[in-house]
Image 1 (cartoon, rainbow, N blue to C red):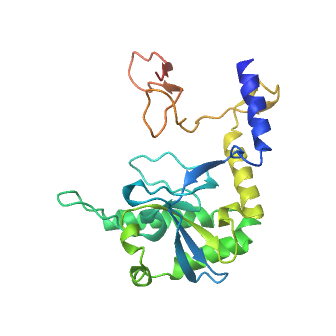
Image 2 (spheres, rainbow, N blue to C red):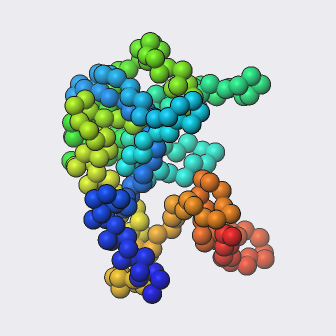
Amino acid sequence: MILQALYDYYQRKQDDTEDALPPFGFEWKEIPFIIEIDADGRLVQIEDTRSGEGRKKQARPFLVPQGVKKTSGIASNLLWDNAEYVLAIPRKVKKGQKKPDPVRVLQQHEAFIERIRSLPEPAASDPGIVAVLAFLENFSCRELMRLSVWKELRGNPNLSFRLAGESELICQRPVVKDSIERLAEKVADSKDKGICLITGEERGISRLHPAIKGVWGAQSSGANIVSVNNKISGKNNAGPTPAFAS
């Protein structure tokens, strides 16, 4: 009954105009800087969304595609990420810290572009997506270095894109948003089927779930309420072992 109540609550909050929960495949994320471009992909400005003073500045939250789980490998978010991924700008490090590998930074940037290029039609032909790709193919760091926010960009903040004259991000444009939701459902709907305990429908069984933030005693980056480790080698294979977060 608890699961059913949570499911019903989520459905109700989808229609809440003031405090709606993100749709499937999306999340609310604080984005300090928005790259505003025209329809041809030319830079108009980089908007600082933060408010407050000094170190207490807080960025405005935006509805963006669900972020990937960051590991030691290269994994790009879709249409938003940090400055290394989005603009190939190596983050500034303090004295004594290891400098970013320029080759890796370029690989991250290429992964970011490739993730956008992989969008299916009709999203791939959306004017916003076309403009983003045009910007990423033609912008220069020299142009960015002349901006007042250059030092802030070296801090490796999160960025996303918006077309000039529009209020929503490019990832929120109707055609793009619909495509992202469909992609998220396709990924979640795996070949392994099962009966949902809540809806009674046959659906794919999700292999991975995003970390949940706000869990008491867990890391601020989020926690897995239930996780499974499965030994794949060795004679004493005990099989899946559940591990519950405190």
